[in-house]
Image (cartoon, rainbow, N blue to C red):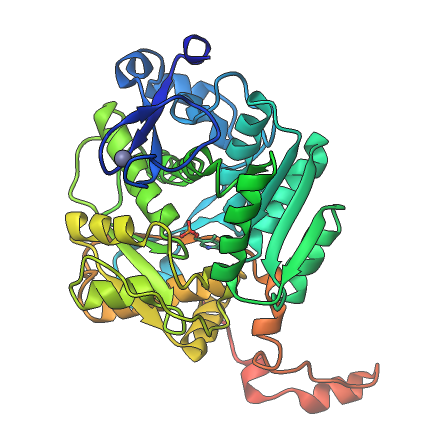
Amino acid sequence: MQATNGFMKALKCRECGREYPLTATHVCEFDFGPLEVVYDYATIKKSLTREAIQRREQTMWRYRELLPVAKEPTVGFQVGYTPLVRADRLAERLGVRELWIKNDTVNYPTLSFKDRVVSVALSRARELGFTTVACASTGNLANSVAANAAAAGLRAYVFIPADLEQGKIVNSLIYGAQVIGIKGHYDEVNRLCAEIAGKYGWAFVNVNMRPYYAEGSKSMGFEIAEQLGWKLPDHTVIPMASGSLLTKIHKSYQEFIKLGLVSSADYKVHGAQATGCNPISSAQKAGLDFFKPVKPNTIAKSLAIGTPADGFYALKVMRETGGAAEDVTDAEIRDGIKLLAETEGIFAETAGGVTAAVAKKLIASGKIPAKDSVVLCITGNGLKTLDAVVGHTGVPREIRPSLREFEALLTVDDIAPVNA
Ligand SMILES: *Cc1c(COP(=O)(O)O)cnc(C)c1O
Ligand SMILES: [Zn+2]
């Protein structure tokens, strides 16, 4: 096994550094520390140059040496390379010089960044011989596992809190996955899945496959660096559920520096949460190294994890890079969704509202200085969380099909010139 894969070397405990073979396992037997994939960077450096990357297809797999599959990926080879959008109108509204949106609302095929982690987890699961895949999810992961498993001919079980948004539930059922709604919140779903994973021989993408799964998030950071012209932004604002995406974007920047693909830079990584589920941001603001678990109550259901698996490491990354965390109320989340939509034409889900609203706060407080460059990681599509904004968008003005009625409702604003 080890001989065939070339680039990944082993799984390694983040606490004690013990190494493990590259199987479906995720915790250290000695201290229960999380396992992480380690790579042979000296070998990778020989083949992974800017020129080599640029010659490859525009998908997340153009960085395949840094993704944990042994052979060619077999699931999700069209995923990633989403647009990095220069957001001048939003920049002006927020009062910052240079602002970009990494737009994973249009990631293929299920319109969230989770397609990145799932394509890696399912490709690796197949390499390890699994035919049934599963996950514990706050919604988007269930959608992505269901869709990608269907396309790969794998059997899928997805476990979700029973009270998720309609859009997230339908988007799992439609692919024919076995959808199990748990009457409880995500942390209870996750605990149950840990028991099931121990008993059945399934590949749980975010339990026993977690070391591989989590690496898929790095592709978002690789793309940001490449799309910025092989440099890192001064600031990256990232939504946090388990905290995994934030830690992996940091890892992606570190790897690009290590491989000489970007030059070393003073970048800051900032974390965004909802006030109704803010275990990581409240610990960061209080200057603590550890979070206290909370019971989630927020419209940002995709981020509603009260006991975040990578919370401790997310706090560490923010501390090391000099980043900050902030959280926002449900009303601020809706305003954030509207702000993104009205200034940039991007309709994000609640997590995107969280990220936009947190960026606004960090810029207003000077934690992101006006002279700097910022990337916002917008991770999911608003069409899947319509429930959160229905009743807050206004209503169409209705008339009969008559020119007279149309002209009767025109106001001064309707006929004023547009400053485009
Ligand atoms: C899962 C998810 C995240 C972040 O997840 P982590 O567990 O912190 O990696 C962010 N945004 C959306 C829309 C998600 O579905
Ligand atoms: Zn250990």
